[in-house]
Image: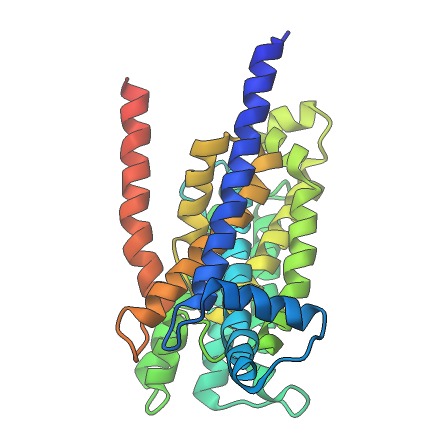
Length: 352
């Protein structure tokens, strides 16, 4: 039986983790809105937000600041936060489900499928009459869905029980194939090359509230499905056989988690391009702070992933002003050393 002191200590640790994650996200949001070519003080941001919420009148000078905050920086910050949260929670779910610390949202080829859809739009200059500017994200999301369904179809064809190893191998095969398709289109592209490369490196610039509205429903649906399966994720992280003994319908739950994670990944890639290391590093970092329980790991990964990508985007757009770096470059520069440090620490702890 767990001692009261131990339960209290564990509960306090979780509370501290949530408070710290929320504080980190709020700090990232305010910094992302405040810093730029025009500096907006924190007090001004709070005033603008309160006046917008309660529809209060603002003077001309305040109108200029309000336009910068509400129409330029806030939607960009929210979009970066949603993309970061989507990739981080999908990475945490995939690592638990696949029992693989190197798994991330791109393991199953979903990102490659979404990227192929986007590059096809850029390469052939496709524009759907009913979609207009949203042709690229819509086709990208559809391509990601087609990819995950093909991966699951081939995995089931090879092995009806769809074991984790079979799904991973199938995903790697599809990812490699789609990567070669991307390379072929890049090699054949002319004037579109810069646009294609820029999209593949990831960015949330020049995207307003409309892109937030695109990703938001997918984020809500995918996030809710994953949160409804936290107990099953905990069980399956110890192996499929043990999960079956605990009464988990492994095939059904596995399919739901894979589809939800792919939904989050596809929508994130569709609105921002490919942004690496968020779904790989953030769950490891959160797991070190709060433990492996997915009941806390998933929401904390959302909060920390959102804050991390907001700060990464802030660095990307300010480090070489007035030009911008692709956000994927920043996440790779930060994420690769961080992930190496996490792996070294884990190895040293095991030896100790």
